[in-house]
Image (cartoon, rainbow, N blue to C red; front, side, top):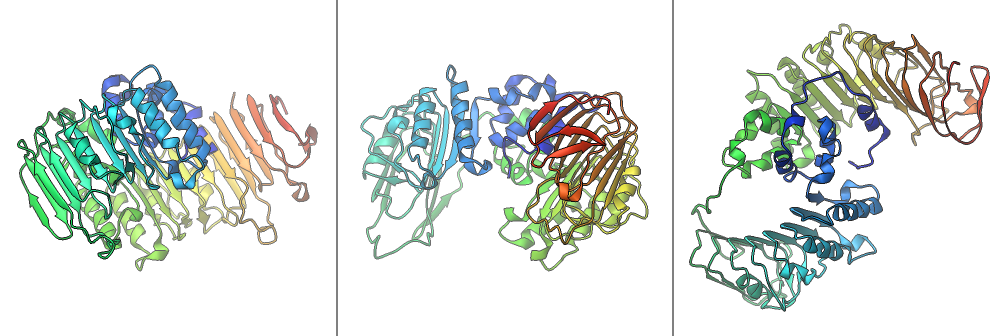
Length: 573
């Protein structure tokens, strides 16, 4: 799960600057960057901080929030994030405030209403709130003069004593309950410039007769389709809809008893997004999951099918209700790109659930033939990876998670600069050493290890390596009796600039060919019963030691540290 306080391995990517490249993104004007950011979830906006030097903190200035507490491991962090956003914008206005929440899980049910009240005071323009607990909405929304669009889902709306929404053009209500049967009619009639109104209704929503009286309304969608929770005995009262909208251009009705759709075109608007160049659009799309890229088809007339031309795929079968549809989607993507190259191919899969275990390897082989540049594959079934990846000359970055890697008979990765291996198993103890040594331009290598991964001695020999992360931290599945063999790491990387070690199992680290200066972030749990030793063969510029859980008496026969939290500079061992 994504968190804004990401794991230590993310720290690596930000700690040293990669080889200089033309930073075209930094030259884009803020107005254009913010326009793009305002159409992304906040978690994706934060991720963009690594794309450009100028974007490192630019995301904090975006006047919009699109957040879900599921993006956070700790609820208090989520609350703090929202509070900080509102505090940062205390002297300005908010363009967009979107929140998905479930008050029933938390002790402060009025939290959402407090945030909505603050957003209204900050003159929010686009408000979108979903709360699965059906709380009563703060009546502040009825008098927020800055509101241009309002979307509420699974809320209860009180009877409005006063309505003043002079700027509201779009209103979307999803499974909303009204405490007064005249509440909605009153609300609509007091929106003088309302153009688009969409409502998805639930049984027992408190509105037996819905009257839509509006002189400005252009589109109206009424969805009261087939609801499984319908109880005819409980909801035996007929419902009626009366529409009085002389400017209406588009009407859609979907109802359990009546279905009607009139295909008149909705009102045209200025389509600024269509004027953006393809190269910029694709640059943005390549950093989004494919499901979000597809959603952009509704943002612009030219984008309706443009997503199909994006040379990248980032997909998870969980995004599909039917597995065959997922398979067909991937196959179609590869087929569309058969005469060109692929920039990015990212796939999360679990072969154990499906009858075709070789499916992922077939796709990887096809992607390799299409000269994929960035390959990212996760499969929770630990299948053996297609050896085609060893000879994919176009690969610039490779990330594999929970796979088994065979012994490479031939390795040719002349372009590979970044290698990330997460909980990978090796069928031969020399496989990884062989792989690393045959990557002549490798700059970044990160490995998160598992017990019994088949590599008792990891030798990292590379003349080009700049950063190395070795994570073999505290694994709950560790069985000392089963995995009693000591593990060792030897690093021979004269160009190394950054080293991070988080380890609770490895016996020794030997670092050869000392560079002139290196920054190290070391967090190691030493277990005296296994006589684990940290061997260091060069001068380090900075070492940050975390909490040492066991006393460490000797460092290469020298007294080093005792049981305490230490941060110090260690020189000339």
